[in-house]
Image (cartoon, rainbow, N blue to C red; front, side, top):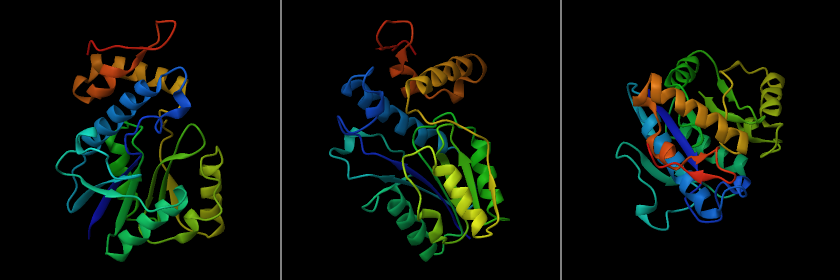
Length: 234
């Protein structure tokens, strides 16, 4: 039995990442924040220890320069398939189960403070169920896991909308597939998400400094300035 923990992320590229945060961020600030989110997410998720666990980073395109992103040695790096998000996810799940992965959990790169217990729960649930879904506050999902190839998961979904989670669970219910949902969490895509992340990091600095996403903390815009500026004190 092997398990695969996969992270889907856009390759760092100026003007192509965190565009929904521009403005108030500049393209340069958005790139710096995105790169920090990916690197800290890999460090954080890399703390998940399970027997026979593979870790894979799947980028939207090859890195223009290997130095553009710090990738821990425990992670393999691959390039996503072409097409919309559904096609890219479908390709990942199909190829994984073709090579005898038994449980696959995929995450985005915008949740560097997600409790690791949630990832363990996802894998454990896949020992009993076909699918696990982590609902995001924006109506999508931050985590998707499966223990079998289920092509319907990636069909007739309005990707990039607030209907992704509800449409996905409707498919699962319609197919009479056994699934469960995890805690609701958030992605860092909008201004209010930045504020939530800032508050969470402030709490972690006091309560659990070892869990602070240090790169993100160093570039996270300050909310006290009239326009966003970066706080590099941490």
